[in-house]
Image (tube, rainbow, N blue to C red; front, side):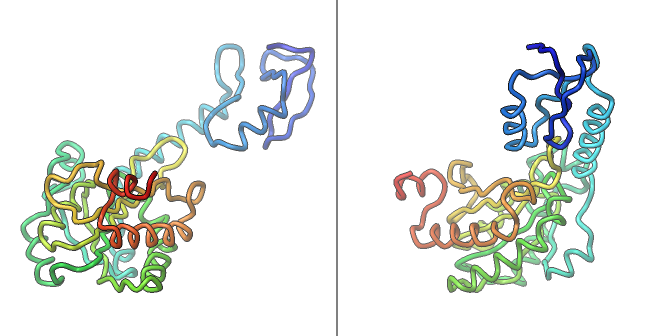
Length: 263
């Protein structure tokens, strides 16, 4: 793969330099540049001998630290208040128990059950949940644009939903327990996903028709990778609303929805 010249990558611009063991070499620099423009993955970094460059090691460590921090952080109370979210908690007492006992993140605490019964009616056509999940950073980074877009899109489609519920220490299965309690037709669950080294701010929307205890993952429809470098949150609001509307009209979600739609 070596040539007479080396290619230095700098913001996808390639500059010819004299051959050096500290530079990456490529036979087809334009192809490498095009490939890098399509993915944020760490490809074609080069190195110094058998070691990666110091700048790449430091970037890796910074991204890893951001991912770890996003798991342990909590969504701020003032953020919840700004969006009018009704806060409830799962049976997990704190973040440590949430991480060690996934089952407790799928069931609401007794106080949360009573609060939902007091504030919400049964058999709502649609209900919106927000959960911190494994990334509180994802909630705070995306909800400012996503939630207003989702609400507006649902209103335009004729669906007037009650105030969203924020579920602290939530796993995806918490939507099933909420379904047992309030029996809504469709639940939209916006939840922070497990952070990676490319982004710690990825949110997903799990949408399910009549979620109840025993619902399988195959029964849920997912709109994933909602973040500024993926599906933009403003656009995602419309996509999620249209998907939820289709699920309500066809009374199916997940694999069954795909079969009905011929996908």
